[in-house]
Amino acid sequence: MKKDTQCVQAGYRPKNGEPRQIPVYQSTTWKYDTSEDMGKLFDLEASGYFYTRLQNPTNDYVAAKIAALEGGTAAMLTSSGQAANFFALFNICECGSHIVCSSSIYGGTFNLIAVTMKKMGIDTTFVSPDASEAELDAAFKDNTRAVFGETIANPALTVLDIEKFAKVAHKHGVPLIVDNTFPTPVNCRPIEWGADIVTHSTTKYMDGHGAAVGGCIVDSGKFDWMAHADKFPGLCTPDDSYHGITYATKFGNAGAFITKCTAQLMRDFGSIQSPQNAFILNLGLESLHVRMPKHVENGQAVAEFLSKNPKVASVTYPGLPQDKYYKIAQKYLPNGGCGVVSFCLKGGRKEAEQFMKSLKLIAIETHVADARSCCLNPATSTHRQLTDKQLEDAGIPAGLIRVSCGLEDKEDLIEDIKQALERL
Ligand SMILES: *Cc1c(COP(=O)(O)O)cnc(C)c1O
Image 1: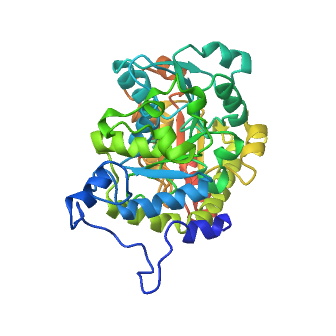
Image 2 (image 1 turned 180 degrees about the vertical axis):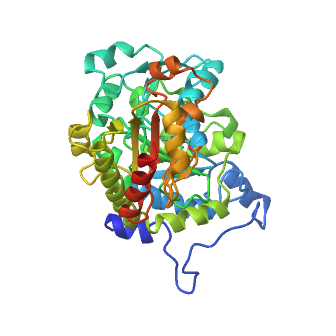
Image 3 (image 1 turned 30 degrees about the horizontal axis):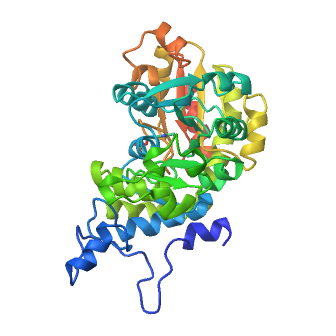
């Protein structure tokens, strides 16, 4: 199947007389005739369902669609993007492990890694997304277990050189995990460039309608765990909580990562996506290939308009030829990246507040990647505890506004921005 067909049809193929749309398995549990039948599931000797805290068929149909879209061998849905990134990392890291991470990542992921996972004894070295191979090399330690970055970072809109990061990760015998939330597999497939694990906040473009929070982890099936068995004992030595199963030998490179993540982490943390949300997510996926080009078209038009306005100090959008990441975006995102544009007004916090108050169509929200356009000024919302100096140091000037261009007519969006700029 080609990408457009996968968006519509991959993952669920009903047999004769079965429902055309994915059924919602609104059931916590499954019934068995004998304890032996159920015992085989607990021993991972047979595949099947027993309890929705670990697995649900609705979720698995939708995860299979995302696996197909990303070109992976296995996938699982999680309750949120945060849970997806935590599980992807914690599946191969433990107390005493170390992560190499791009410093240009989503704030929630930064907190997760730099604060919460640090408390669990997992240390991280943050590197510039523009680091050279030698600079990346220098960040590795004997206990490094993973490299992490975002294809297009939220909200900085830096573009990751996936090939370079993958090459260095593999040289050090660890996988590259890429959060591909912003471009989605419609605009970039990180596995084709060497990424081993791909994560998503499906809350964003995949759902696309501001309806359901969710996450997803996809395994490329390409990382050879057994070749680095000393680094990944959780995958390469027997699991006592599953009668001595060794995931890497029993399920191979194609299945080990997601099976362990489901059998251990989902069992113990229970951060599963509700099957109802998985159903809603699938409705979004059915039109993802139609929506993404429109988000890109609107983002490009708004970025171009802003870059020519004298009240705007700067615009960040990888689709603009003057953008720092234009060249690398041409390589990884030839059809465009996403509909999110950042810009700075001349002036600061006061001008940003005034501008946003004057918008009529574009709403003030913390969300991005919705069908409806929205915007945010970090200085007066998510980062309001910081002083102007601290904001400047974090690369988020007080006058910075992030606009997420939805699916409206681009001329209406530009008109809205224009009238708000005129009131400044
Ligand atoms: C929103 C987001 C997340 C977190 O996802 P939630 O679904 O909100 O938990 C992670 N990574 C990126 C790039 C995001 O934009």
